[in-house]
Image (spheres, rainbow, N blue to C red):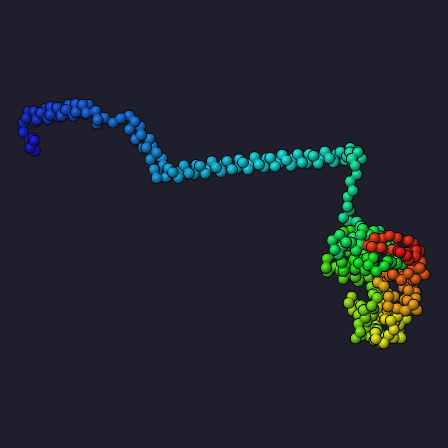
Length: 367
């Protein structure tokens, strides 16, 4: 319809308006019929519901972050589960601790009431080893169940048990190969026993660390059959050598060495060298060196083995004097005459076994 001006008669305007209304009504009627006749154009209720659900999700959470939200929720659930498991484990631990404490209180009450003592009396006694055992104060050497085997099944010493008290004079006697030298080496910790325990001057010998062994040996003066003197030094220097090892001050050394040389009868020969001395005199120097540090034990291994009878008697008399001054003397020998003459305590070893231990004993003829 062409656009035109409507400035004319009012009747004409009214007619035009009515015409337009009729056309508009006719168009609306046709559109409505078309819509209801075409069923494919009608939306289904499920589509509307889905559309509505998606719209609601989009209104609350952006569509791309829905997966993240699900993952976060799963992690929270797992964390909560772990926390609950830890709490349950802690509760179980606390219950166990409470039961343990309750049992300890019950045992304490039973001990106080004497019921435990009755139970122990009815049970057979158990033999326990006391790891903190130490010999009596008057025992200076103790061997308990000591065995030593160089070859498996052939013991040089077999289950030796003995005690030597402070101030004793003891002979260890036996034929060659009986085990005497093995005993000496065990006491000096040159060897360790195969079985058993050894105490020397409160030292548990077989348990000593390497750095403790010199301390053990300083508690013993040792005299050997072959003297073992320093050939390039004089008598004074040989004796002073033992003092230097323990770092004795020079002032004390100058007093101690002459005193001990006088004790062994060599005060006038302090400048002589070993090759200028007799066998008996060399053994006296060895005795002076062993005694200059005033050890509580003197261990003499065949001290008269290289001496004539006269010097043997002199050395044994000297050892007796040393013993009377308070030193414990242990003499290893197979010289039956000096053993029988001196009438001291005699321990006899045969084939590694102690066969006799007698006060004021004598040498036993093993044949």
